Length: 508
Ligand code: NAD
Image (cartoon, rainbow, N blue to C red; front, side):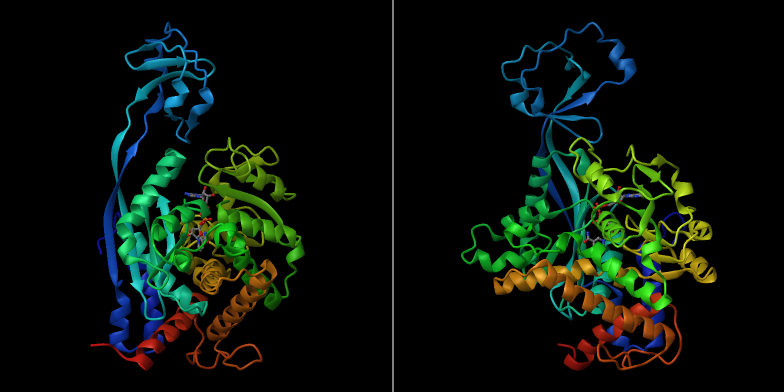
């Protein structure tokens, strides 16, 4: 695929690990061919009607309207704020109000001068890439973000095939989403866009076909819209609840799902610490991304006594050498409606630093839990940590990998490190099939066992230490030589996927 400003595509770069591991296990050539490209690439468009908006005037434009009389809005609370400074103009905001308007501009007391921008139909590009289903129904998250592409979703969908195999759950791999910045649309618009996405995709999904889940920019609320749209009008709709995972626990979601990815990251870190003889109580941690994954991992680690000393997100970076109060930060970011971008920027309990300085903060563990390609070669040169635990998907570039290896910084690769989310998604799906509801204790016990066992197998592959223990057997997976841990994780995934083709054979 064509490069990105001279760089390889996300997909081609990620597939280097695939080819390395496939060579090592001497993968059957036809199986390799099956896995090299996704089964299906769905690209489609969704349309919706946008509401009218109030758009703030620039200071120059505002000069021309400074004599405009203020409009007395009786229901100003019906203006819905968006992260880009605009407001959604719900009609009832104008009810019984005295409005003074000139050339479409109004002056709202205490808020300023705004131009009314007419709503209307709008089109968004949508994707669902179904990479592989030999081990079970397609499974993977839905991302709402302004920087998504076919290339990115192909990489993320393939990652899901590897991840579900590593987690030993009977699913395949998929990923998809919509190209938009969800913070710039109203709740109602996001609902309508989501309903339309599922309306168009309905024929290609189902609890035994393709099962979406939350990812960047989506959450349990959006999963509820998806489930409703898919099951609406179906005679046996309760049987179909497993069509999406990551739902609210009150409507068929699983206990522990919201924190599952962060919890899985921490189980991996615990296993690493046990192996290294490192005490997590004295650990200093830096976290990039304070969304679902980053904030859960930070909360759980803080609960174990570790200190989170710096956090970076899309809008700012904070630092406190004595350790940030994570409960207060979670409240500031996720429990505060006025924090429209759900950012750590402006948190009063820590000082602001630059993103550049963030990477060089003296710590033991770095958890990238934001987007891809953040740990480049340059960043890896500056890290002052012993371990990078990849909460995000694809956060480290190949250069970053090479530098980290050279500097002997340990790595827990994404396809095991963040597999907790999809593992508990499987538990949610199982509960939905059986009409059961498990406790958080039950969920976490199973999750801990699954993650630690498969992480141990990956470590054995990396160290070429085939063994059978009471908990696992790594003998079928070791390749007769030591390999780096990222390749080791891929070896485990590929051997498990390949087994299906080799034992079941190919339908002709
Ligand atoms: P989220 O939308 O809840 O949070 C994303 C966070 O990343 C936010 O804090 C945002 O500010 C930050 N961010 C975005 N762009 C950034 C940038 N350029 N620099 C710094 N920070 C930036 O998303 P999430 O669900 O927590 O997912 C985070 C990562 O974890 C993604 O790579 C996702 O694919 C991966 N992941 C998520 C899950 C899950 O269950 N949610 C499971 C496996 C992997």
